[in-house]
Image (tube, rainbow, N blue to C red):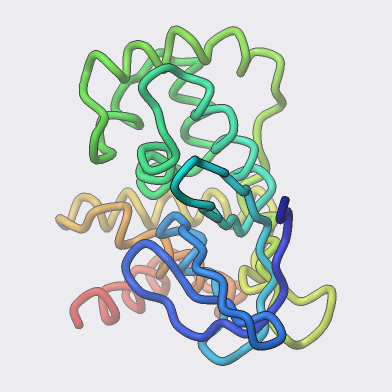
Length: 213
């Protein structure tokens, strides 16, 4: 059972990446958020891994944050939610938003994901309510994707509730301009980490510059 991988990020494509560990390439599926936090190839990264063994395949799912991995496990306990659907949900809604959505009984955070209709979203809210009630509100920027600079350096260098608020404000503004959260999240998270102390207007301007490409 593989629980963590540390190696060179060979490439990132679509919904997965290839991590080279001592010459062995591991295909790791991940949310758009986690893929956006990976350092650029060929830098070294460390990802948390969930291994799913099936009769016909062994699949690896990677996570930048322990919160995201915990929610992946939680989501896949719900009937009708497989690994791919769980990743789709985590690509459009971060753990902090899912936690809030379950408490507020708001289906939107789930129905934005591919493969999740109103019926499944209602089931998610119903089955997760009692489980989430026992969980603390998740930290949003405790990244575990490590760049090669050292054990304390993460790809998501920002942290704390301040950056969380900035991130959410930026995402809401970009959503209002027509950009999907799934495509905006990785860019906004990285820009906040790279531009410590930057205000909302700066983050939005930089994000628009990249999204316009």
